[in-house]
Image (tube, rainbow, N blue to C red; front, side, top):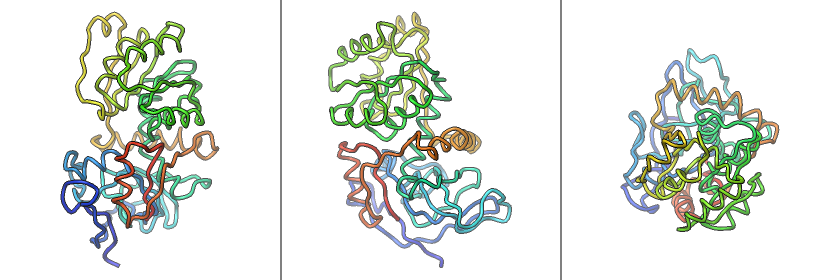
Length: 331
């Protein structure tokens, strides 16, 4: 076998530009693993790549989207010692995961817990690695602290709720629709607020939730006006981590808040990190998150599932902004 099926961006545009094509099977190096992909999941980056607004890192094809996968080891390189043919694995890629096979370095894989099926496993890597790295590692969320999660009904948002509870922090959240807040409550959300343009109400809600002490950590998946509000609602030495910009890429920082509260503001991405950094987050995910998935403390959240042949419909579903959790592609 020398070819495989893959999602293909025939030209930049809407979901209709996506096709399924026969493409060459990837070849592996000595330290790489060939994985038969059984499921992948969509991310905002896939939509932007399809639109021509977010190219993948060097070495990844522009035409084949996909950043996360779940599948089984089909072949190992001569120097690989961590994996054997037939093992169930999942992980992240710079791109090209929405295909029947992918090639990746052995250190960028984690073993899928036995209690998870392919679709559940595919819904995990991007959201749980992002949320775990942002909350547990970068902002150093501690037990008893209060965390605010914007876009709480998103895949990363629901993972963040669960990870906050797992470390015994208290999660609050925002969404543009009440049904997403209700859904997040099932995963441990303490309380939430529907936010459209009422950012003064968000500041007042944070004051109420914390008894006037302020939010310790805010993970922002939206950007724009949420960043403006964050400066007011964060506690002294509060930490703000920026993950997404769907609500706007610009914000106004006020020095009086940042300086007087000694706020810490960070930005984060996964896709553009160096190889060593990606290995580090994969190891942390394997050590701290995978056992909690295996025990059922953490659960993947699936909004919907589509076969690879309906990749366009899957993109349209994610673009609707009506999703709660992940859109999964079964391959």
